Every structure is written in C-alpha cells, then in structure tokens.
Image 1: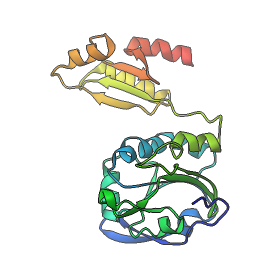
Image 2: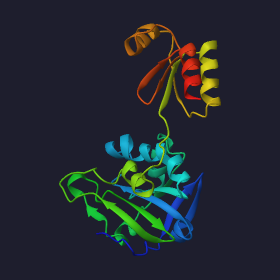
Image 3: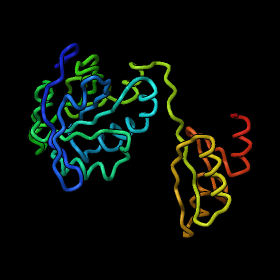
Image 4: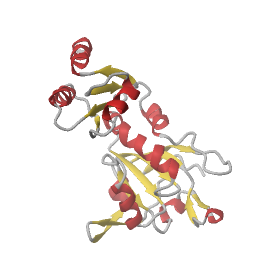
Length: 243
C-alpha cells in the first residue's frame, strides 16, 4: 500500500533504554521534523544486516546536510531483539524503533505474513520520507516472491532528497599496533576530516595479508573509495594534491 500524502500511524513504540522501558510516540519521532524511514523484515536477517541498515548509517551525514532531521529503522521485533541487533551493527546515526506488535507496520498497510519462513507477521521492505507526520514519498519494494531489495535502499532515498548530494568518502587504513607511521597516517586522515575504518593486523601473517591485498609489504596502507593510496608518504602527497 502506498500512503503518500497521508499521515503516518499514531502509535506508541515500546523501547528499552538500559534496564528501563521507555514509551516513544509517533509524534515524538515525526511531528515538526523531516524523517527518513526504512522498514525491513527483521533484525539479524542477511540483507538487513549486510546492506540495508549499514548504508543508511554510512550516508547519514549526507542526509543530515540536506535537511533530514533523523533516520529511523523500523522492524517488527521486540525491543530486546532490536537492541541486541543494534549492538552488533554500525548504526550510531540511526534511530532504531521496535514495532513489536506490528501496529505501526499494520497501519502503514505493510504487514505481511511470512509464516512460511517461521517469521509470523513481519514488515514488507520499504522506505519513506516523512515531513511533519505526513508521508511525502514512499519507495515500496515490488510484489515479488522472497525479499526483493531494489528501491528502498539509502542511495535511492538520498537521490530523491538531494540528487547532487556529496556522499561521504569510504576510507580504510591497514595498521599494526605500535606503528608510528600508522599513527601519523591516522592523524593526517583525521586532520583532513575523514571518518576512516581501521583494520589493525596482528603479527601473524601480517606481511602476507598486506602483500596479497596491496602488493606492498608494510603498513600503513590507505584506501579511498576503492582506490589504494599507499603508505604514509603516498598519503601525504595525495593530501597535498587533494587540498
């Protein structure tokens, strides 16, 4: 069901903060705000964990820079499951909402029966942009068998909101503990404003791992958007050109 132009359901989400229950209302999430929402079949499921959720978290700075106040992930799971899933995911930029009874999902017309998988009632996969409680735009996955994932992704939503939005660079660095050059390279990346992912390698097989990935035998090794920059000296030269 496409509910563009309609108010989102008014429900109470039962969440957990620490050891306490906390009620969160639809108005608290949506009233007077611009919110990007994506809803998925279940916590810990493959597509949800590997692609759907992490990409929204990764692109969050671009969403926020283009007028979005919050990014909300909704799943028909209880608060305990949702919190445990969140603990193992990169989701610091997201609001994780458990729709344990499926009330919000049902009100959206997105509650589907997945009893054949032992899931019971779950959400169909979709995303939407909500402004002041009204669904302005929805991207609903096509009615196909299985779990299609074609239009509710973060890139599609961002392209709708801001077609020319600059997406965050994907930066990773291979390091080892006690490496002074690695420390300097990380500081330079931080000074340049990059939010990098660090892969710290132990002594066992480190040179073989670095050699297999980069063709070099030393760390640090820096990668930006799929391209290998190299070690500290190469990074310094690259930074001067990028300035």
